[in-house]
Length: 122
Length: 182
Ligand SMILES: Nc1ncnc2c1ncn2[C@@H]1O[C@H](COP(=O)(O)OP(=O)(O)OP(=O)(O)O)[C@@H](O)[C@H]1O
Ligand SMILES: [Mg+2]
Image (cartoon, rainbow over all chains, first blue to last red):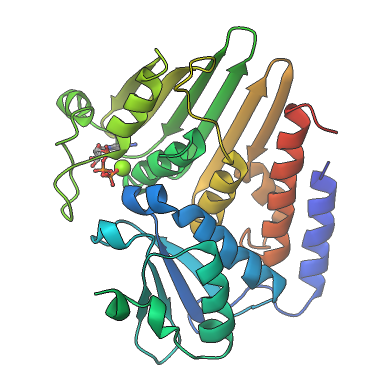
């Protein structure tokens, strides 16, 4: 089992490396809707998928945060992605699989996945 | 909700909205008795007596995007479907405690689900809030307390990717252990 000792080692390694803290302001923001409808519709596996991809690809300038109910329950799980200097993109009816594609196309390559956006759903 | 861990994730959102700086989740499984007691406690702004009375009514909510509050009534329904019960204690300005008893042998009892994912989500999305997760099953006990983790970390952020990865592993190993794994 993982121990607190191991956590201590992680701390030391992090302190030795240059980047102590990531820059929350400048990077890409992924906001997951965590209202009751969002959670019931599957927001948690979507979030877990985003986290897994961000960790696996070592995307240091991406911040994942949450918001409450966005107000359109039938389109949940909803996710908003904002790249610095660009307009916010709202993705609807998200799944863990869709999250992977949003990471590889939008987050990494800057290309919006149009078919998942709220515009395509309405 | 598909499982109890999702209810917990949802109830914790109420605590976060209530401005809590500490959210504690306790799970006690008694497999012999066929009973599970789930408690969520926070130090948020709480509710007065009349509010507490109204929250189990699905038409009560203080949110303004939708008229109906669903989180608590759904949790109550899940407990009552097993022959169990839900209790709310709250004190204005002090905090809230929501507790539910589930009869796990009842055919309508929801599975517990991925509590590890719920806890990891809460920590990841709310790095400024402290979380405690205590899980007892028979004579085994797992405990995670972000205050303790922060103490070890010092000036290193809990959001650091290696720290998040450690927490993820710590949770899954710990749960495997209390569930009779390695
Ligand atoms: N932990 C808490 N602390 C303070 N107030 C709470 C807490 N939990 C619930 N409440 C109050 O009870 C109301 C009803 O909660 P409930 O979770 O049932 O619905 P909701 O959060 O309003 O909406 P939904 O959960 O459907 O998104 C909340 O709006 C809030 O005013
Ligand atoms: Mg709620």
